[in-house]
Image (cartoon, rainbow, N blue to C red; front, side):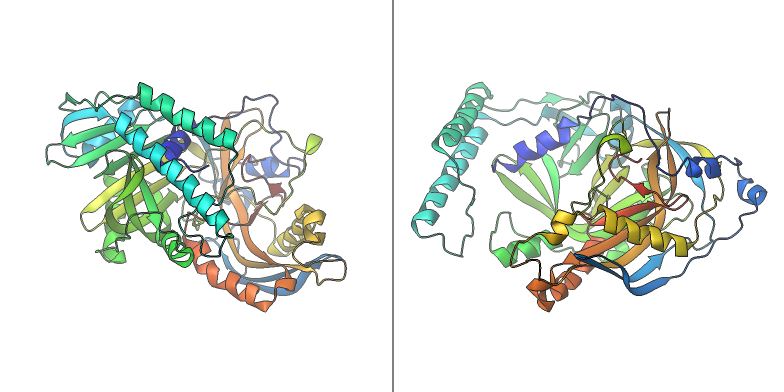
Length: 494
């Protein structure tokens, strides 16, 4: 169902639930080879003591097929990104918590002195407008159905609702209208010492500008020019909106600052605010929106930068890596995990007026260097592991599915590997709450059903520029432990 942006995003931001641990970790399925190599020696001289030395890998992999079955064919046409110095250290980290004091220290550096603050809640009028927006959507849907569901479905929520669901949703809004305040009240403040976890706080600054702050132990977000949750809307989403003629959001605002200038501001501000050791992994044009009431309001246009902790020059992947929807990682006794890994990530938005928004997720403390240069498997062996992993983890049912014109006589489903990055990835340490930040191969691939024709392949290839640079998009990525060649589950780090 489509509720207003504030409700949806507030729920997402403040939920922060993780499963309760039930069993201990199983870190890898490679007979503890990775842990043995990692712990052979320790400290800054580890690389010299083990005699591993500089490790080199090819910068390109072109081969087809690298693997095939009765229903699947895999090819590789991929650039390979590795560390320039050929040394691959392993670090030990642990989860950290964001506290009110942490956020206060950053807010003091980022924002002007505040003069007043309030909880950013919705008033009776806000909920009333949201209810009317919902009812208008339902009316548009009914008109669309009566018109025979024409192709031009702009501004229509195409989901069908039963009368009971509509009544339940309407009652949900009515209850909130009943309990919401008539207006928002503010109090005079002269610092940021009153921050409250899991609340959206709005501040009026001495400069007259508005800012908002929200945080809990896992994330923090601060936005200038925003009285509610600040939201970034990428150029990719905007172009998709134009293509589908949905027009959901307020007008797009182009950046009025060059990429080079914005990048310089981003890096200097990250250092000034205390985010040392972070490097830019991806960037894209974006518009900053303020979500209040039933609508989003555009604040300014600029550049969004996605940063990750650098770990001594490892190449960084452009976005968070999620468990691929195309891969089956198995179930049952072959793996046991504790909880989903919180990926450390820093997002910074820069406009012509400077830094406008920061968001920090999944904080970690680096507790030390475990091995200065762990021994990695040769790339020829990794190629075999990648081929076997894709054949064994890509579901047979998906490859053989008789959908959209496929049958047993149809051409095989095709997978193409188009980029491989040897970067750090977080793995749980067995019998510990700590993690290894260790070298893993991040294998980006695309899949296409040949029944749809060459045009589909060309479309997918044209989208890769966005996929490699826009963190809003979910990638299909296979993660392979570079030390023992085992498959790594991106969400659980085993």
